[in-house]
Length: 100
Image (cartoon, rainbow, N blue to C red):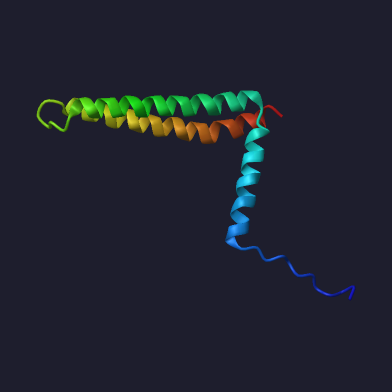
């Protein structure tokens, strides 16, 4: 009995995913104020850039002769929004590690 091999609990995907999500949310809520500020501002900047890109696409109106410049500007803004999201994912954990 003492040397018997212990069985590991077998979890299904329906049980594992909520556990992982809770762990991620708990870790995010425990972030330092500096990291939290960077995360929130990066998300806000990304949303603002996406809204601006959408407005440019509406102004473009699909006219390839006159408004191709609007399309290219919207594409560039969308790429910058993705860069802001990347910064929102990478920079806060770095701040967490450096400020310990």
